[in-house]
Amino acid sequence: MSKSTEQPLLWHYTSFEVLISIFKKESVPVMRATHIDFLNDKSELKYGLSRIIDSLNDDNDNETIGKCLKERELLVAIGETLGLHFSAVDTRDFLALKEDVKNIYERVVIEQLISTTPDFYTFSLSTAPDSLYQWLAYSSQQGGIALVFHNFTSLVDIVDDSKYRHQLINTVSKVDYLKIGDNVDIKLSNVSGSKLDYLASNAILIKHPAYEQEKEYRLMVNLSNEEKGSIPIHYDASKPYIELPFDPILLKEIYISPRGEKDQSEKLVQHFLSNTPCLSHVKIFVSDIPYRG
Image 1 (cartoon, helix red, strand yellow):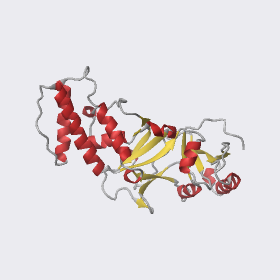
Image 2 (cartoon, one colour):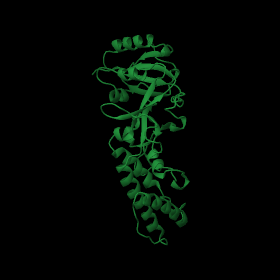
Image 3 (cartoon, one colour):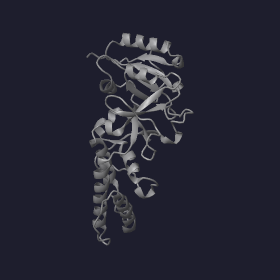
Image 4 (cartoon, one colour):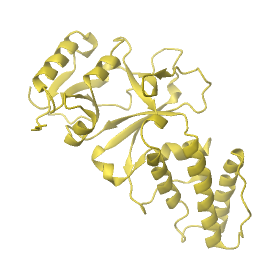
């Protein structure tokens, strides 16, 4: 089959086995969102938090002692809820006050948030179409597939089921690839609710520029404020996850990896689609990337 003429929005690079698990219950297919503590080394979260901290109060021309004091007051309040205490600072010395605020951020946010990861679940997508970088990262030598969604923001419309509540679902968010010194536009004073959750949810969307080829988007679900047991937590051999139901009409295409036996993989996917009525609209495309490996 020739290559698609439409530009898909978001890709999920994965395996045929994952496709089977998604449509295990054809009436309500589900994507799995994994707890962030089981995704990557915590250095990734720490990197994002560090970029946020470096950006706060770094513009001397636009900052005032009053604004800095308000920021410090909020941080101290957060720290006290965690059992932390802070020494007084000379509020007349602007530079000393700014340095004190940064130090409190590092102590409250990095030390505490890294040691007690928020109860966030997430899964990733990409705007990189038919990407060799992604195929090498997420498909095995035996092959793999990519699920292509043209409209992913509504992927997790919650079905009429008492186990799920629509307000738990966040929109898909773009990951920013920031180097040291790049500005992050975040103001803690504008946040209602948990400041730590807010900082963590933004830090998760920041990665080192070395990963920019991923062109990643993330969907996040925050269970931090939910009653234990209200949302079923599932487990496999390596991680906890939650299930997010979606409308199968949102899956538009399936691409076959350039790795492995492409013809056999295409035949397998075709057979699966022919026996899954809710996916009769899905088109199959085979990557045209020349690959030997």
